[in-house]
Length: 193
Length: 193
Image 1 (spheres, rainbow over the protein chains, first blue to last red):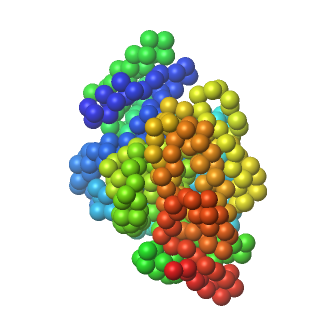
Image 2: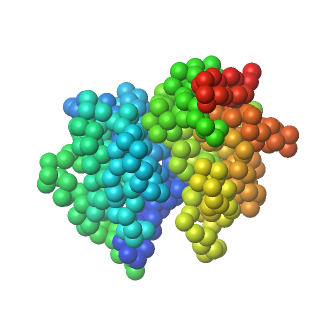
Image 3: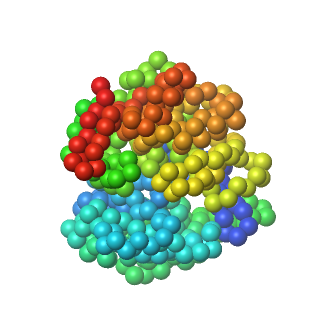
């Protein structure tokens, strides 16, 4: 998506440790007009799929998913929650996700009643790097017996390999911008096309 | 807002400790069609105000704020972040919010570059009870020199007093449903009109 690449080039900043900051428009300040066009792009890509629900993870995915849902017939958006502790009360599906940012594992939960065997799910998130967060969402779908129809990502850091591994397993991953390389010293960012 | 009251009546559940669960449509599973009509209601209420930015707090406010922003000329949405620790790097405004749910104070931050003296801000959140989270957002606006033009809330628990205190101070608080009383034993919920 050319517009997204241009925004990353002009407003993104590259930090040491494979960090790409795009908080001017994606995940701190949110450009909802851009989100709308991202939703439109995913709707075009996944046009052949019957999507009944969008699943994302708090917090940065929520705004993108809610605006994008308007392009999928206003299907319900469910956001998985990062829990402080595992609470096995039987009413929720639980998995764990390792966060490189926070250098620890944390539990991620979704209430059982909001993810079901009949659901055809589109996963949405702002970033895809190593794919740990998405693996967590896929785990939750598998636990529920729901079908993962596709994965819509705003920014994939292609050089970290998570997206290619998912594609190799057959997942339909539509990343609107794939960063091929980025240099924290020069700030240079190149994209895969 | 009659539709919201009806959804709370039919799908909400009252728990001990003044807890009203509305996660079927508001803050775990999200009904984006409802969010759109909520945005429309706030736009009607705040029609005389010049809003340049919407400020909310992660996580539950984000989806509502992003959809509502479409009714305010697609103004930027900024979500304040709950931080693990206070990091006084000078680039962010910081305040603390006491969470009754988690029984502790936590830091809330916003990057200085996304909240400015020229901003006319609409605060949006899913819930208003004692008003602690909103006080935090107001603190952040004051630190930035931004003007709080109004406060849009989905569900106010009127009996907890936070909304009335803000109104008494002159804030224009538009809560789309105000719960006057709720009973965890009978499940009965009454609204203020």
